[in-house]
Amino acid sequence: MELFYFVVFGALGAVVAALELSKTSKDRINTSPAFNSFKNNYLLVYSLMMAGDWLQGPYVYYLYSTYGFGKGEIGQLFIAGFGSSMLFGTIVGSLADKQGRRRACVTYCITYILSCITKHSPEYKVLMIGRVLGGIATSLLFSAFESWLVAEHNKRGFEQQWLSLIFSKAIFLGNGLIAILSGLFGNLLVDSLSLGPVAPFDAAACFLAIGMAIILSSWTENYGDASENKDLLTQFRGAAVAITSDEKIALLGAIQSLFEGSMYTFVFLWTPALSPNDEEIPHGFIFATFMLASMLGSSLASRLMARSSPRVESYMQIVFVISSVSLVLPILTNFLVAPSKVKGGRISFAGCLQLLGFCTFEACVGIFWPSIMKMRSQYIPEEARSTIMNFFRIPLNIFVCIVLYNVNAFPITVMFGMCSIFLFVASILQRRLMVISDKPKMESWTAMTERDPEAEPLND
Image 1 (cartoon, rainbow, N blue to C red):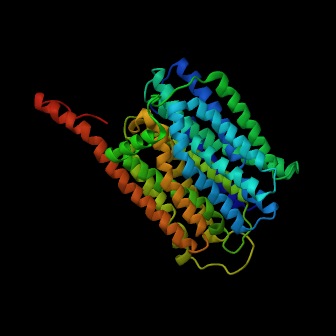
Image 2 (image 1 turned 135 degrees about the vertical axis):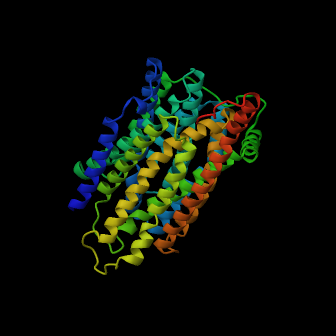
Image 3 (image 1 turned 60 degrees about the vertical axis):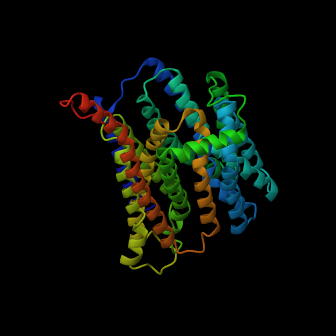
């Protein structure tokens, strides 16, 4: 493997270590022992859930190809997963609010375990069922756990600011360290121990079962709106009204869809971007490098959210602009750097520049997750939290399905350009969100100055 990869990985690792070790009292939030116990329990469960998810990711396409399925059939299986998440996501989200978030988290474990079991069959119909189950599980993973956490945090009377600590740590561990360790463990099972491409799915099922046991033994139930007289249609209508009547919620949903849509598109594009002429690139090592960059971002986010200024609504504008610029790099290198016509070989100079840009984008992803979680906890009403969060995923899943279906119809530069535009639009919407979220404070200060002309302006 080339020295370049080790230099990038080592530099990112050094920066992450420096950020974590150099934290001062201003960068840390003082909490209580009861909260620390609550936080550690949630982080353990979340890490196990993410391990169950990350172990599967690198081997899904590979497993399908070993069963003899072509690119078109595999694409259909992936579309089924995203389509399932879109169709059933709002239903399971509403059921989570009504029937209980703890019960929904257990359902996630059971559904994903069943999805893992289907991977033992080479039958296309069985694998399709597995993808549908996986889509349902994904909707629960990105809504039920966060909804349970926010409700339980508030029920126990912990300070609101402490939530940001859990969010940043969850992304640092679950989307960073656990992703790297899962990749290495999966590589050990498949390559070193030669247990076959199904082995990571079996290991994922084991981690999910352990996490489910902890949930059943240590989590209490909480609900959104458990009113007996509210059916699913009424809950859908209430969530839709909340989104359309509150501009902050609508903006938050649009921002989330634009960013996550670009992020999932990037997942499909980075490999052909770095190896347009079938260059030999270490996919697993590059994936681990991306996750380390994401850890860097979550570490930065924890520092930012520990302070009263700048506010999340403010710094996320800059994050979206930087992420937009980072995905323009493949377009710029395509025009400014002469493309290599040699098949195979090492990564090109243009590929090296793009890798640095992609690491920047992944750092932005690391900042995005805990920051969007904090904004959701502030703006989304508790009684329909899971339902609204899954409503946000409908345009995301539609977009990803369209991209998957037409992935070969457009040049890769067009796809990156589209993602860059979406991210820039997200920065504009974020600016609008910051402006309208400041209005109540300004109105409060105006009223105060009318009573006391010498009153000081309110601080963020």
